[in-house]
Image 1 (cartoon, rainbow, N blue to C red):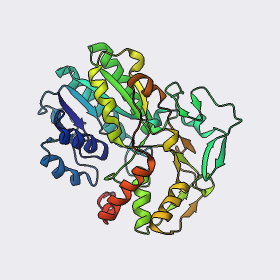
Image 2: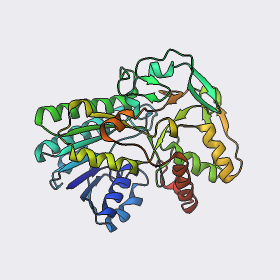
Image 3: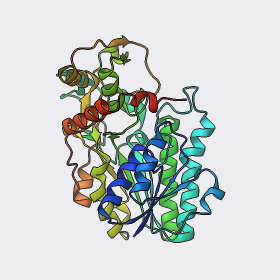
Image 4: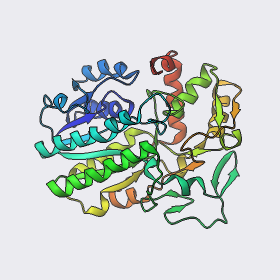
Length: 356
């Protein structure tokens, strides 16, 4: 099978492409516009592994005309920040062009070549207001839903399921991903294309570009090791906010199963893939791990709320196990250790991936 990976020189795209290239399982084509600081760092490694790289922008249909025909597209290209379009660094129009119009162009490519399509989507398609209003309690330095609370449909202590509401507001970023999901499903139904929507929790691992608004695990560990300033933002400045953690290489078995099950029923088209509750960790707990690994470092408190932030986001991936016989295999501690070792070997990593 020939697979086209968009955003191939980003963290997720390069991780998947590298694994496939090293195994020889598939022929690979990668598309990237190299607009993300640090993406050039992955180019040479992928070329050495035999990945055919195309320098192009998926927002420009003419850039896609030179792409060879492929059997499947993994859409890993996106602006991944929930603050995109509102932080003064990226315009709302740019966000929509990257995350929505780019998806439309890739769906047109799939239509022309009869290719399958997998959209790597996000947990941030789920509605912000009810998530922000969840009754929380602190437990061992982390938020969790209060044990005696009456939780809304689609949420339990195990996390947020695919049935939870996606009603606005979900942020401009979340809206572009949700709209992309809808269009992908419509293209699949209308033109008879195999389409899957994989909603991922926070993806993390060695080589991820770290910034405060994205790649938080890499940013926190690299910053702690280099004694850079760090802040707990919002939620009383406690650092109790929680996210789950997933290594992108853990997606590989699920993707292979989806390739082979291209005619799966409509109910299996949207699935959460995440580390779930076993991998959930708060910033305060991450700080405790960093302190034990690297020594003490002060973290400031910033009580100012950040737009679209929520105290707890853990995805329930039980459907992935039922439908695809999938479970995450890389524990959160192994992910943190991998990032820490990469940080040790790459002292200028934060500068490499910093905004220009």
